[in-house]
Structure formats: C-alpha cells, structure tokens
Image: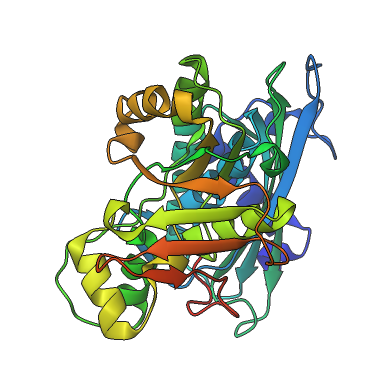
Length: 333
C-alpha cells in the first residue's frame, strides 16, 4: 500500500515505470503533458481493461490496453498519436509482474508508433483489484477529407472482415477455464493503424469501419444496420474462422459471430472498390486472411424497424443475426 501513498516508495515506483516506458513527455515532471500543436481535427477515446487472466498466448493486459485504444482511434480514420495509461494495482502484486506488463505497454506503443505521455498509479487493498486494472485514453489526428460513418452505407456496399474471427475469445476462455485443449491458439491482439493506413493509402476509401471487440461481428453488423434501417446479409461459408475455433464454439454453445476479437475490423466499401480494398488488406501481415463476407441488400429494411442482419448458412438457409443479450465471456478485455 505504501507504493500508492504519495511518498518515497511511490516516487520509486513511478520512476521505475517511467524508465521502462522511456517517453520524453513523461520526463516533463508536470501535472499535465504539454504536447505540440496538431493540424486539423482531433479524435479522442477512452477505455478500460480488466481482462482475466492478465497474461495469455499472444498478449497480456498491457498490450491489450495499448492496442484497444489505438484501434478505436484508427477505425474512425485518425492517426493515433498520444496515449495515457492509468494503472490500478492490487496490494501484494509482485513488482516482476508489474514490470512485465509495463514492458509490454512500451513494446506495443513502439509497434503502434504512439507515445505514452501521461498516466496515474493507484494501489488498492488486497482482494479489491484482481491484480491490475488499466484505464487508457488516446488522442489522434483525423485524416483530412476522410468522413467515416455508418450512415453513409448504401445498397450494394461490400462488407469486409480483415481476418479470422474468435481467436482472442477462445484463447482467453481456454486459459481461464483450464479447458486443457491443445489447439495452439493465440490472441489476435494487435494495433490496426498500420493496416488501416495501407488500406486508406490504396485509394479504396471505406465509408465505415469498426473493430470487432466485445459482441464480435454480430454486434458491429447490428449496430450498422440500426443506424439507417439497413438490411445486411453475410455468407457463413465466407467467414474466416479457424476450424478449432468453430468446433470449440459449437462445443461450448458460443456463436463465433459474437466472439470478441482484438485485432480484426469490419470495413464497409462501395462494391467497385471492394476488390482493391481486399488486395490492400491482404498485402499487410495483419490482413492476409481478409474476406468479403457479405453486402448491404437495401437501404431500408421493408417492415423491419431498426434494420436487420441475416446470414446465409452453409446449408442454404437464412438465419437472423442478433446482438447478444449479454456478454457470454465477461472480463475478455
């Protein structure tokens, strides 16, 4: 508890983390980071991370915190610039565990080309913090001339998913519940700003993007459909899903459409731009498994308030896609 009390122990802990993060802005020693001017409009987002367990194949809570915030900025067309990171630590947390998480934050920030410019640290009593919680905020510069909104989606637009679905959810679930399966799965946790920049620079301009976190593809599609009463259709056989993820989902009664991802996005593009967008995504390491999974059928769903989403199944039938009522996998991010 002394490490959160504002004295010498706290100064030592903060200095330890600053040394790992290595940001020049953290060295200012002020109550606020003083940042250089940015041309144009800004995007701002905030998020918190409570994943259990703290470490999992493909990532950990530190990497997740950086990537999740970077991705929220990126899918609105912003170039992520600066992040804050506030850590709530539970009394008794080993310093080696904290070091490992902060090193991961620093490495993920370098990969995403963003800087951690400010932060906060609090310590709570043992039994009240579950190890570590992290809250992050991010600032990005919006690209000039880019306007992304689900309200711009129109009949005939293509629906593209950037890669295989469900890897993060099944990885965390398998580790958390000690299911004992040897699938070799790893979380897809990754910063998407590089892949999105490649897509935008290709000239294939999306009208809407969304990262597929809690609620998965189903939540993103239903939210899109509801914006303008759109009718959307996806093809089950076109969905990029690992066989082991699909099998585990069926075994556990979890729909792959609702599984959380931490390194995948949905992009909506006019049909003429779909193939060039697909090529741009597949040319990037994070988009090699990108697929066109469906399309916008109509701008107004006849007789259906709030829009609708359906999936053409492998057997040729049609199934309604809905948002999950509640999260089947809590503490997934």
